[in-house]
Image 1 (cartoon, rainbow, N blue to C red):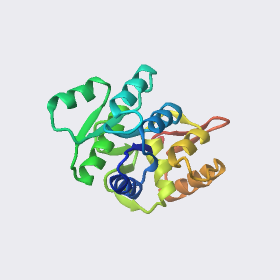
Image 2: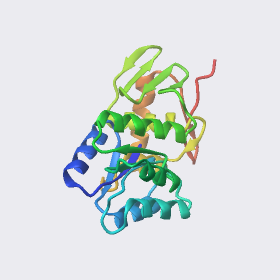
Image 3: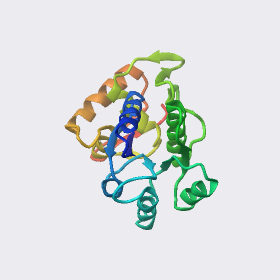
Image 4: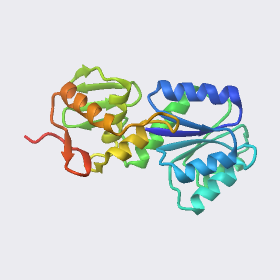
Length: 221
């Protein structure tokens, strides 16, 4: 999953960035509203963490421009404002959730996980496909209850597929969602990650759709 972080305070931005990366997300950052607006409008993010008090273009204006342009990615706003009217204004502008500063990083991560689940019509915190279970909070993957050790990129590929069960996902789309913008991307490595996942999972849940990509399906009886 790929996250856009728009935050102008350097120390807080670095802390959030590190926490998101540690949680397994690919993260792009912007330190002002203009750059944030442009990235959100042009790149395929799975969620956005958006500060309201931004230089260049404030967070509410960024959000309103996205929504006016039919950019419907999930947005969590960060605000130092305690007034309930400011929170209502943010929600009415199109935010999906808000978090007031100061906050605990664990809560931020939990809210992001919930945003992404809701965006894909999922309520349960654990994703499942046949005997395969993925817990986005703990990063644990199991098959029939037995833990499976995955690399960071293998986990990201499986996580994205499990958030889109039954959908055909191309290598290009997977590449866009598991790597940050400044990463040296190579879509050919997706085949390697999928091959490793199949061997490690030991069950046939990742289907290759010739010429199109991959699809996650429960194994047939």
